[in-house]
Length: 375
Image: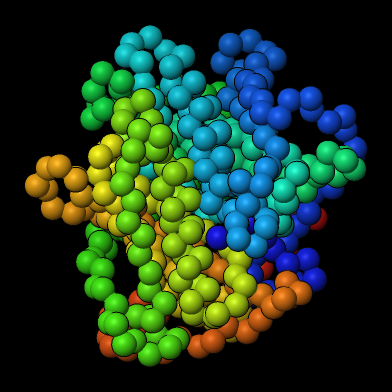
């Protein structure tokens, strides 16, 4: 719902909050900028990086007045798409456009405020024959004081699609690695995401509409949907929806679900893997549905599913995107509040709850392990 993490409290239940303090630097004169840093010869690692910067304005805010988390997700995807497309077009042959297929876990570490400049840095860190990984970091800069903080981290996977034939996947030019270990670690990440993406695709199921008289704090009570007609402004050069546009809609729906369950202020804590199963074309009607799957004492996991169907053609609805968002509840002073327990109804809800608990415990253990490895 928004890029915000409370400064007054730190819990082991949520993502680790780490600020990156940078010495004061001259402020940028441009509000929007992008550059590809190619300081060495062609093909050097510097050529695999890209950065965009933009000042946050009132129309970037959510109803609470801070920058909407969905806008940050959209900027992350834009930077990743630019560096991926540029890299894939450095070879001879058909021109292509990089399409987003997966976003790994995205952490929301600190708030972004209106008036701050957001710097989104994207770097290609691994390439396979037909896909590439882009690591993205988001820094927020107070241009009055020069202070900077790391607000988001994400890893995105793209595949290059030919401009002549969107179904034709192009080969990706290889990058140069600084060491064999770096390449091997990238290969492990590639194999892991490929396996998880296929498993997620196999788990696709229909979303049942909630009952009109659902009891409070049940799944049906807070389940919410948004219907959106895909227009030209939502699309890439292929006339398919931008991944960042879809993620913004998903974040909005997840925030509505969390707010209905808690009836308090809520904020995005993290986004687990976002899997793009099928393309969404201009003219389609998308239905974005969010439902609670797991609740701990301090966080909520919300599954968000995106289904699409052509408005003009008689084709059945299909599952296009799926992801899990984690939210927390806040009081008026932005301190974490206990989350009301989720009332489980039926075997399907219990199964999703157990799977959500397993993800929660896995992510918690990983955060603790990462924290112990910090110098």
